[in-house]
Length: 334
Image (cartoon, rainbow, N blue to C red; front, side):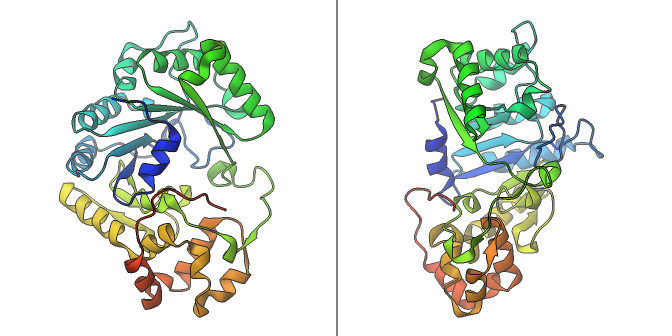
């Protein structure tokens, strides 16, 4: 295992076929108001352990995949599945990023013994925190999770909503855990509120932008494999939970079906164009010029509009995608 910063992970994710996200569960005990996937402590349905084992096996068999993120929900709620998946993926030589709230830390400053084995397999542990998390997770528990991750040698990324107050609070927590030298073992990643799931009506939306102003979407290079066999072309929360254009969805019940579905997503000309030349560039084509002039709330909204307008089947878009070269570094979304 070696350290992996989020900037380094971004480079891997921008390379088609080099990464995937394993969405391990819909369950989460925290219940934040700003949850973008509406995770619940006890959602309907049960996990099919054998199906999940087959899907993880399929990921292990793909040599081009170098990085696997594991998220949910809260993946630490699924002990057996998390222990098994991280063990098998690490043995297959994959670098792992774990996404968690740290709720599994204990108030006495310790963490369950089994979590350390899991954390030791990760190159990076992303521990989200903000005022919503803090209202439900005691600081002592969060600090215990920070210490547990650091004790195994994992790089730590504290993910916060990117306001000055939230950033300052993240710096305070890291200083409380590791002192003023916390930057030697951790970083802070500022993110915007994702207005999906329970957060859909939480705050006013940002000002929309013309479609022509959007750039590439590096996240369309990293498919999501759900524990229930559903696949998504990207990590858009609505797509992951089963919504959006049909072309962004697939499914698999065994390793062979997983390879077939991932191969199709990797070759998809529209997705290749989205990650190489950018969705705004596609609006320069005569068929989509009106979408370039119209305002869109985010790059996902433009993507869906293009697909609804037939861009996924358009020979011109397919030619652009097939001719697209692999980007060397990820580009920022606008």
